[in-house]
Length: 515
Image (cartoon, rainbow, N blue to C red):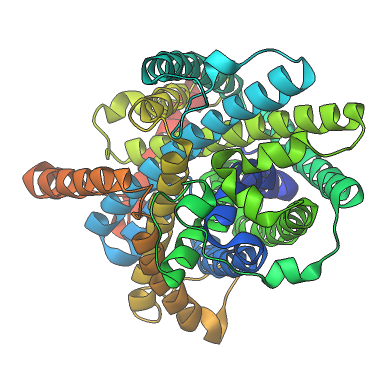
């Protein structure tokens, strides 16, 4: 396809699955975003809503898998959009995908800190974390506005330091090779399954009420009934759509299988399989977990009223053995850490692939690969810095999570939309994974579904994303028509592939002769 094999191809099929499964990580969004489900539609939103969102994610993964089977490159979505829809469409896809991936790392690492603070520091070691925990309205009895402002300032700066240290650790692991990263993400795949099963069983055994009517009970809890998680009351259909961000924030990032294509053996088969299997098993185990949370709630209305603390209060009040809860708490935090680690891997490969084609400012730096570690070192550290920076402007977890889902799914829809128009015309080269007659119907469902998600993703409390979205669109238009339309050539297509392949062959021959 016109690219040199610079990255080490050391990942097998399971590892390709595991990196997407680790980024999805039902122990991340499935826990930290649970209050969103309770704050919009109680048990129905948490369970039936999970199925609706999960099936939609499966449709998107299947559509992307068909394209990834044909074009298995580290650029993934950006490369596909360029080939199927033109270099301008591909360039725009790259920026949406990159922003979404940055939000993945940012939101999960904020979640890592909050889970570590509340489950491990406070729960396991009984540390007083009051000054590290933000206070929201209504203020606790006896607390003044000035005291709340002081605590919130302390909590903010503590979070910035904590998230920075967490991200540095993940960047160092990525820096020192795909082999180490793969070992951890492979381990994470098993860890997520084990902890999810144990967590589900724990909630059902020590808290289950076995009232299955809870699963189909929908109550619009936007506004005060949901603890203000969604600040103001919204119509039922809007409440349901906002609640779908619970599964769709969780089941995202599966394009990591595509971004690691050039490090995966038999990528044309392994990439679509990795994406689809990671989504399917996350859907299944995540549903069981969500059902257990709903069943273990003593009072669903009160759980919703707890707002952002809904899941933490459920877990802390669960009358399970202390040692079991401690093991679960530590396992959840470790799984979340590796989730963001895998997210940073995916982000760095996207930066590397885009820079390789000259799509980023300073591309000559960001496309560099360490000859020792065979990793895109500069891209890894750029991704780390940008993900920390994203938390400075959007310290609220809810906004980061919604941004992750919104921008990633938009970037997923762009190559799918291009494929709908190109299939059977300019797109005639396919891989071993084909959707056949289902290709266009599923593609239409994916594109229309993302349009609905775009509407839900900018509703309060996520309306800060409007600033991001407008800013990104304006910036892209100015850059493209001002500079990039003339400068950016995109990935090699057609005759350019043969030319670049010849250049690579000559360079490799020269290196061999020198050696």
